[in-house]
Image 1 (tube, rainbow, N blue to C red):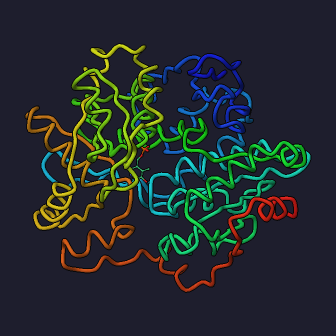
Image 2 (image 1 turned 90 degrees about the vertical axis):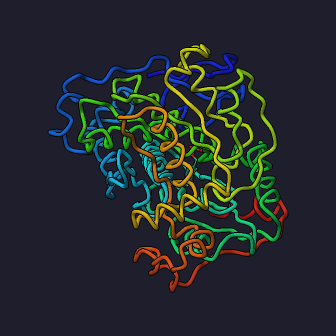
Image 3 (image 1 turned 180 degrees about the vertical axis):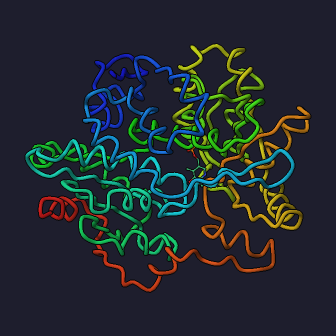
Amino acid sequence: MKYFSLNNQSPSVTFKEATFRGQAPDKGLYFPESIPVIERDLIENIGSYADDEIAYQVIKPYIGDEIPAAELRRIVRETIAFPIPLVNISKGIYSLELYHGPTLAFKDVGARFMSRCLGYFSSGKKGKTIVLVATSGDTGGAVANGFHNVDSVEVVILFPSGKVSAVQEKQLTTLGNNIHALEITGNFDDCQLLVKQAFADADLNRKLFLTSANSINVARWLPQQFYYFLAYKQWQHKEQAPVFSVPSGNFGNICAGILAHISGMPATHFIAACNVNDVVPQYLLKGLYEPRKAIPTLSNAMDVGDPSNFVRILQIFDQDLPRLRELLSGFTITDEETRATIRRIKADTGYLLDPHGAVGYLALERWLQMHPGMAGIFLETAHPVKFFDVVEPLIGESVPIPSGIASILHKPGESRLMKSDYDNLKEFLLGI
Ligand SMILES: *Cc1c(COP(=O)(O)O)cnc(C)c1O
């Protein structure tokens, strides 16, 4: 498979090149030259296929022979090596729990797949591959965890001192081995600036192979299709395909679901469930795309004012808005509605939503009210314990910490405190 840049100014590249580059030189997102068609038997008899076989069949056409079959099967197996259950919550509403991975959020899937592909492509290469990321908290944890102990890759994570939560800091600093945490005296923007300086430093890039683990990377985007197929495998009402409601920020997750559907995965409809950062729902209503500054909300991983993956959705639909509207609806959910939903669903069903999942739940419920007799799935993208400060006061009880996280809270973290100064960073990178 070749990948072209959606800005059309850079040459097409292989999967390997797209994975190393992240973004095309013309700043465009990479997009596959064709969308594969899944074999009918896999859809019709999905219940008889093992999860890792499904994932392998889905991703294989995107990789071609760039990774040998046995290796790709191993990568896929390790990517989804945790449960992804579909749970019935209320009449016609199911939760796809994507939070059973090591950092309790769906980004684990993309990060684990990408890290293993980079590891494969880097083995046997001269010199080390260094993944350099700045994080304000969450993405860094998923990336660090995804790359932990992957051969031939070193990860350097910059985080702002005192500005990430205690749990997030533990997730970054307790891994060790090939994961290096740099605690920068400054804010997130300072971290990001240092990373940009490193990528722009020609001298450094001659000596080292630097890459980013950006969320728009095709190796993070494409594997997100896996769990849509796994949801369909668990869907009991095969006579009526599910509606998928996806809590959306940068629109990578929902775009992967739509891609899976175009490839052959049955779905009745998709819902872009947004907080008040609702550029896409507004676009679907008015036909005008008006990016703006992000507004802080309770579902903060969705506070995005100009979602980068939306161009990929437009590409899938050839910029045809009427056709897009047939498959995709948008909903805007306020913080007040998010809180009320968390409280109500806990009281009525016993199920605890996190703020992102609550946005997905309410959007789905509203759509179903307008389409009686249908049923659907919302993606529960994070474990509620990650947002205990929001959730606990609403339900008046504490949320137990899953054992995997509880154990790291007692581990001593290791990080290097560094002034926000590029020469210090460069010296550190050259010494790895
Ligand atoms: C990143 C994230 C989202 C948004 O996903 P996109 O692919 O950016 O739309 C939703 N929920 C949680 C918990 C996230 O971490």
